[in-house]
Length: 258
Ligand SMILES: [Zn+2]
Image 1: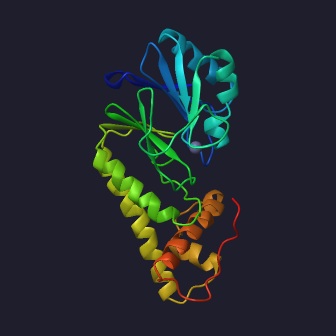
Image 2 (image 1 turned 135 degrees about the vertical axis):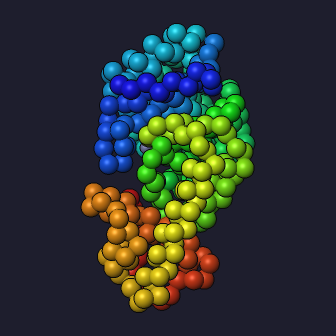
């Protein structure tokens, strides 16, 4: 259990003990404000993790609500157990069985929802004062995989630019350490996607058409464990090129259904 303390912002993070190729050192759950506190992403349903969260919530005078950035298990599995412990807390997310469905611009307690599609189609980030809780839209290190839905990659780039425009002072990501050099991190994310696209277009221009060839050339740096995720992101990049009328014919598309 690692604590990520941001006293200047009234925020504390708890990193769950669920490390892995997609979770980096583990999933971060964030506790915001006090009297009552609000939780962003309760995380995995691990006893030690939930107990640490609950103790912090008690110290902060109870729980006003639980906000979920997206419905991947490592972010949302602890929702039922946390609700059992704090039955008065409301649950909010972009979809699912929730008390409040959030759309871009909606507020939930101290949180303002910011639509950040890409990693999942209904992913939300949350602005809380000068902080932004970014789930898997922006991580503390490394890059995210983009789920291929129509328009996903262009919407993701637009969301990154909007987040940059809002200029939070710190990013509290779903994985990895807090990010204080916000503009540089967001610029790096945008540049990273555009660099992938540049490499992909170069591979296509060089006559590559199969998924394996395209991954070999444009994702040569991806470790083997992340190659399936790279294929998913490749699909999103191919969608974007197709939307823009830039996709040559005869390109093999990665299978759908991640
Ligand atoms: Zn995650």
